[in-house]
Image (tube, rainbow over all chains, first blue to last red; front, side):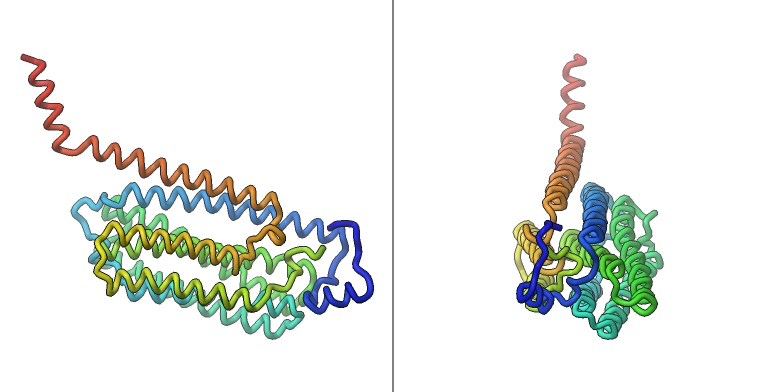
Length: 215
Length: 119
């Protein structure tokens, strides 16, 4: 990014620490850094969407219209399992980044599959939960509270599903294109997205499930 | 300078981040499952632990820092926090105030007042 280029021992030390640092040119670095910035700005606008959905949920917290209450419907155990899966998947995504940026394509692919299995486990638990809630008459039409719940938790779940598609695309690109600069630049953005979804989930278990079980 | 997407993250970062995140998750879950704290302090503690964990994951998983996150992204982050805070705080404030003003007790009070004025 700055004009200064590394030489000799300095360059060797930098490459030992960051094996993929030699990829690309100053111009391509600029292009991909701008994409990272653009993606970051997108994530921040997504933060605003979730802030509004949290606000909506907060406003409707007491709007249960004598219908099913979260205390009766929420399962602390399942919320804990979902949390564990998502947190573990955030760690294993870190392992994808580490392996890919070490130039180890096969290992990166393996961690990608592990992360996708954890993500699929999360989605399976969430879908089971939604199905049970519908069966017990706690669908989004039951009351303002359940509308707010499904709007917030459903939007997060939809993001996780999109993240799964992104990871599937990354897996194909690992195999077809290898660890090239554009692939690593994309992986960086998918990583930001996946870690961001774990951040949103912290808000969901802390402001939806735990207070719901406590009430 | 190596662009962030080509910088290999450090394994200890993920280890610290994961251990801290597990601790900051287990405490609030245990509090709800086994604790006997009264509701309001428990909710405040859960919120404080959530804020801490947001910071931990931003720092160790998303590598949010002055040297890896561009200044523009940090400004965007600050702006998103500010706006999200205004939306959340503003909505909750206005709507709880509105609910409070529409309490049945209050309506009786105004009803009594208006009937009093009628005479």
